[in-house]
Image 1 (cartoon, rainbow, N blue to C red):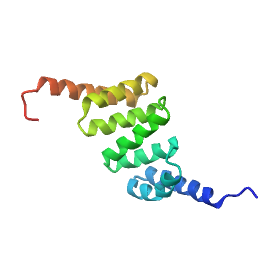
Image 2 (image 1 turned 180 degrees about the vertical axis):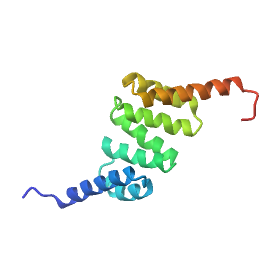
Image 3 (image 1 turned 30 degrees about the vertical axis):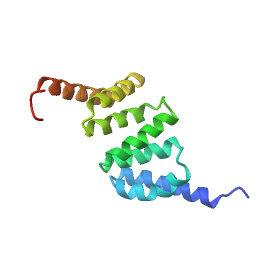
Image 4 (image 1 turned 90 degrees about the horizontal axis):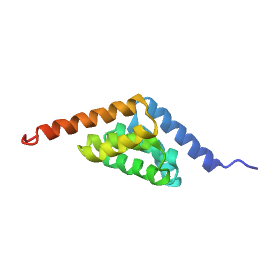
Length: 135
């Protein structure tokens, strides 16, 4: 007998979390993902999905941790670098965001990566121009 009920449950939870993220329900997705994260903390796909849910629910530090974990596990994962850059950008950490977005765009020149990189560069230029401002 090759069926493993526990792993089937984990797979179903993962699929459910994917569906919930697609339906713009990141908090529900995180709830579904809980047992998956617990049982497979070193899975790139699990960490990516968790990161997306954290980012979509504005849990920016947790998103940063999840995407950083993915990069530790797979340094060539360009989407994790893009999403980490977005999380850092939303935290106002433009220099760090720029570095991640620049790397993501160099690895895969998708339009959304280029656009995010341009946005951060524009914000950095505005910050430099308006250094005397209170913010």
